[in-house]
Image (tube, rainbow, N blue to C red; front, side, top):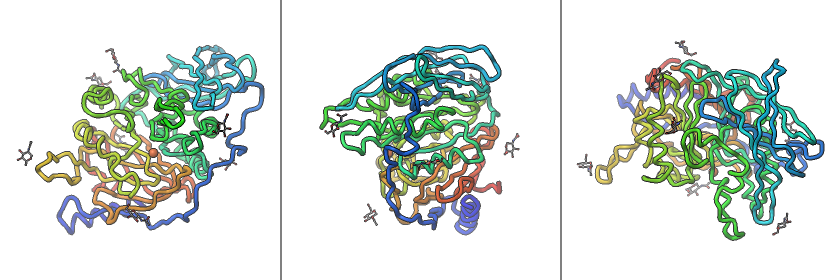
Length: 464
Ligand SMILES: *[C@@H]1O[C@H](CO)[C@@H](O)[C@H](O)[C@H]1NC(C)=O
Ligand SMILES: *[C@@H]1O[C@H](CO)[C@@H](O)[C@H](O)[C@H]1NC(C)=O
Ligand SMILES: *[C@@H]1O[C@H](CO)[C@@H](O)[C@H](O)[C@H]1NC(C)=O
Ligand SMILES: *[C@@H]1O[C@H](CO)[C@@H](O)[C@H](O)[C@H]1NC(C)=O
Ligand SMILES: *[C@@H]1O[C@H](CO)[C@@H](O)[C@H](O)[C@H]1NC(C)=O
Ligand SMILES: *[C@@H]1O[C@H](CO)[C@@H](O)[C@H](O)[C@H]1NC(C)=O
Ligand SMILES: *[C@@H]1O[C@H](CO)[C@@H](O)[C@H](O)[C@H]1NC(C)=O
Ligand SMILES: [Fe+2]
């Protein structure tokens, strides 16, 4: 419904105005019943502690190298460190292998973490199902994952997108709909703001543990690719906690060294036909900073013959027409937007604003202080900007929008939900957004993406 009506609207806009860039797009007429989002209580089924002495909990995986042959397995043992071993084997193979990890603990105000394990498995075969076990010595638990196909230009692959999830009853609906989506997400791109533990007194880190148990049912079986959000900072000098990102960096490891990054907040991975660059809205990004220098060296390395799809993740959106977090992404946009146009990024996904929005292909890079050129213009080399900060956390929906809807905004709606980005081949990817209110298969907004390198045609002028 979304893409077709948008198409019709833009098409007639073009014919009538003769201008390339006309009025704003669609603000959904769907208005969600306003109810407060409520965190699931500590005794919810979603937070259940697995049976057995020292049983591993909060099991989750992420990509463990640059190309998808590695997996980082993470878990928490509550009573004692126990074994740091992961035993893993190919489906239908009797040959069991083992990898050893490391165990970490941290304290946060008066909270002391349990034993947090991270173990990187390397040199896996592509496109293969593996089983793995953790928790030796006491209670052993078994899971599985499927490695991605070898990196290559025409490899179909489906990514899910969730941001700002938190741990409310709505969060549980979002995750359930993602799990049941018939498009079958193979890897989840997580757009930042995980547990929202910092909304509790003293950032009660018990809520980091409950969140880990909540997402295990998905994250133990498919990689979640992590982006850092503002709720990961946990900077609380009033209680003596002055080291930013302490709980997040202890609990969620990412393969940043594999892309020559020097910090776990910005890094890249290749996966199937996609090159994914993760940026940090909450680390320095000005000129000469480590993140700036890394990105400057990183973008020219992307080989679109190998990985046609260039996807960027960052928590704070650059194009956001809600009256929440308005212009917070602006300084980073000013620093990096011209690079995104130069290197023809296909799409930028963000979270942070607790609602949904999709933009035109626009850029705003002509401004030079005195020339007055500070309006976004349609630009076929520019990415589409999509905000999916609508996971359902305790802070509720952002429903106050700037009016009129700006020309760059194609579709916006204040509903919780998740999105899917399904790459078909080097030229086409199908994108859809699914609001929680509907059945999990219903698409409230959708769009065929044309790859900026291989097929840089205007999606909105195509009858696709
Ligand atoms: C931490 O301190 C708060 C009050 O400051 C208290 O309510 C809570 O029970 C304490 N937690 C632990 C684990 O000691
Ligand atoms: C969360 O969703 C699952 C379905 O995926 C359901 O079984 C469970 O009862 C829900 N829990 C809560 C607390 O809403
Ligand atoms: C990282 O740097 C090393 C040494 O310069 C280089 O060999 C390697 O290819 C780089 N890796 C990536 C993913 O850029
Ligand atoms: C880009 O990737 C293709 C396909 O893997 C390869 O043939 C080509 O040499 C690469 N180009 C560069 C500049 O590395
Ligand atoms: C800014 O743009 C104006 C108008 O194009 C031009 O005259 C001026 O030289 C530019 N200033 C700088 C510093 O580039
Ligand atoms: C919406 O946001 C604007 C700008 O911040 C504010 O002036 C207005 O009062 C808000 N409206 C509502 C209904 O909260
Ligand atoms: C790429 O996928 C699109 C959408 O499924 C399809 O229409 C197109 O024919 C495909 N291109 C090739 C070369 O197979
Ligand atoms: Fe945020």
